[in-house]
Image 1 (cartoon, one colour):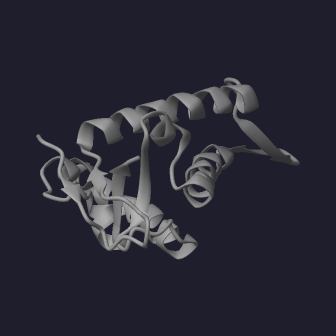
Image 2 (cartoon, helix red, strand yellow):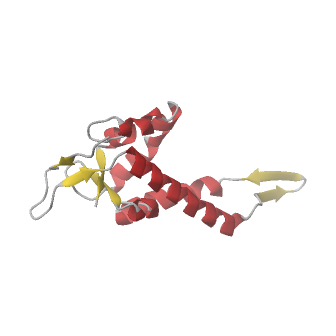
Image 3 (cartoon, one colour):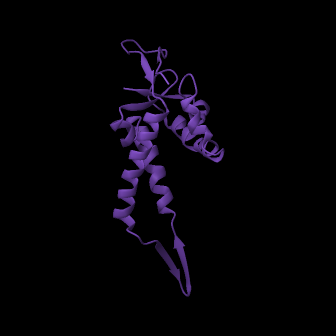
Length: 147
């Protein structure tokens, strides 16, 4: 699968971008899960936080969902890429070439749901799409490009 270079309505002085394909994005994802695994182990170890009220003990694992959500969202907003994407030298941009806005970041984040629910075909789609967009990229109108 070859990479394509595209002119994405650049601002004055900007360059052309090259789409990032499936495998480099997959590697970035693996790197991010390693980082999140380390963060989770440091914060929680092997224990689940317990909330106790009288004789009722509730196992609370919500933080294990909130932390990855915030990790991804905040890095997207700050650097247009998670640490895994930064290591792989790729970033997320809007279709006009601008930095990812918080609205597009939220749309992209929640668009992971249909991408995953359809047996992850929404993610795999990036390997076959001419612009290397996964379903969540298409929904949010974003590209993942090489730096």
